[in-house]
Image 1 (tube, rainbow, N blue to C red):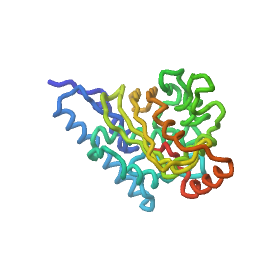
Image 2 (cartoon, rainbow, N blue to C red; image 1 turned 60 degrees about the vertical axis):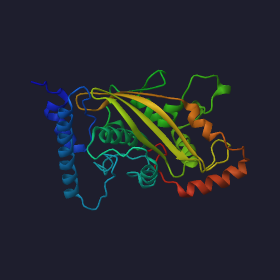
Image 3 (spheres, one colour; image 1 turned 135 degrees about the vertical axis):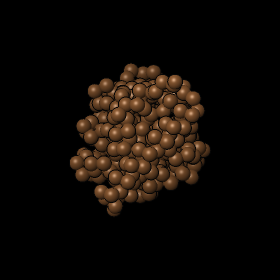
Image 4 (cartoon, rainbow, N blue to C red; image 1 turned 180 degrees about the vertical axis):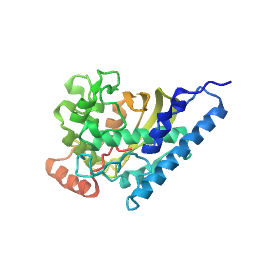
Length: 296
C-alpha cells in the first residue's frame, strides 16, 4: 500500500488550489501512476477556480500565467494604481519559449506559481496583500549572499535584490546600492521595452523543497546605462530552490545565476551621449508598459 503525500492529503491543499488556481505541489519520488493521479487532482481544482472566478465577474480577462492578479484587486494596494498588464511580455514569452508544458502538468504549475510570486513582488506595495509568500519567514538568497527579508525585497525591488554583489566597485556592472526601486525598474523597462520573459526549463524536485532550472530572455532595444541598444537577444540561465510551507506559500527562495551572461549583452552596445540616451529612452518608453521587464 503506497503512502499518501501529506501535501496532497491535507484538506487545505484543494481549498488553496480552488481559491487561487495555482499550486507548487508535486511529487517526484513517487511512482508514475501516483504522479498522473496527482496531476488530475490539481487540474480539477484549477478548473473549479476558473469557473468560480468567471461566474463572479465575466468582464475580467484572466492572465493565463499569473494568479492573484485580479483577486481582491479593488482592496489591493498596487504600485501603479491597479493590476498590471502582462500582454506584451506574454506575447514575447509565447513566441520565444523553448518549452510548452502540458496544461495542468507539474511543470506548468510551478512555472505559473513563480510568475505569480514575481508579479506580487514587483507590483504590490503591502505585504498584507501578498498571497504567494509567508511574509514572516520569507528570505531571498541570490548567489549565496546574505538573505533578504520580504520587507527588504519590497523596499529595494526585485532587480536590486537580484543584482547586488560583493565585487569591488570598479568591477560592478550594476551598482544596486545606488538605485531605487523605481530607477532600477525604469532602467530595465527602457532596455527591454517588449519585456524580459521567463520560462521554466526543468523541475527536479517537489514540495516542500522545489528545485528548478530557468531561462530569461529579451531584446535589447533601448539604452542601458550609457550603452546604445543592439536589438539583439539577451538571455541567461539559472537555478532556483523554493521552500514552501504547508499552505504552499514560499518561505525561502534561492537563486543562482551568472550576472555576466546578462550584462555581457547589455554592455555590448557602444557608448552614447546623454542627448542620444534621452532620445532613445523616449522611444523605448513609448512602447513599454508598467509591466516589469522581469515579468515572467
